Image 1 (cartoon, rainbow, N blue to C red):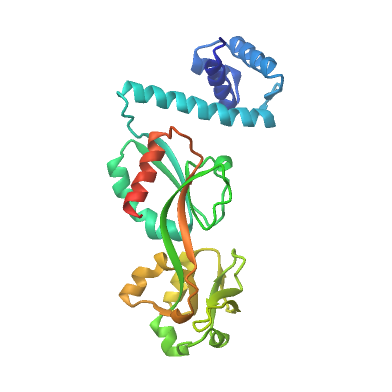
Image 2: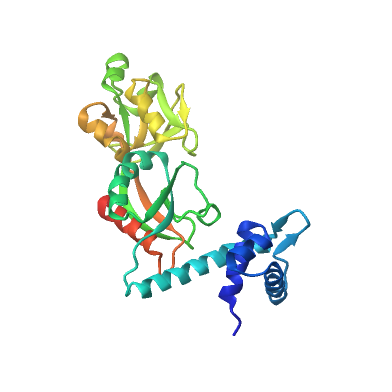
Length: 298
């Protein structure tokens, strides 16, 4: 049987270093031996993986795919060897890439990081906060925290929490502009909205008498692409906002913000999940991180 794992290792080193000689030095092989292995791999696959010139080395689209899969397979092999070497109890270690929304990251994730890293000192965290929905595989994120519907059935997910959305304002704003009693009265108020949602110009409500759902078009002098910005401006008395309750509950408890139009709240629940491109045998660092979040947040 061919040593396919060895071929993958050679290819990954060449693709990463973009140099046959550098890959050979790292693997203790001659440049000609490295070149022969890559040629043999391309012949077996019947496709070109690398485009080689005198000055550069580039991956073909097929090479990009093979690199991604080969890295995952080699990681699994390393993880299996660690588990066996440790008597079945792998120690979570290595680089862990996490992507989360800005609101969730600031409110829920960042405060937990010190405790997590104290518990797992051999894990190195790389955290990106963005409200853009990223391609987990393409961006090479190990875990992404996402809210709403899960559209990619190839991904695994564990629910972290449920949160309703609430309309809030600061006491100073209400004192200055008055308390709206019905959604129709929002016509006379400054509504702070998000610029990345389909409902950026409208807020959903429910008629408390009939139960009928409807959307009220709202207007204001500011739109933002993340929850912390909207929350901060709301705290400054700039207007009303409709925002995830998990993000503003501490402000509500402290009296910095008050809920508005609760009788008309449609009780739309936003589910927040930890999403990962997993399989039956997750890397220990990924499993440890997700279990930690479920235990501390869920």
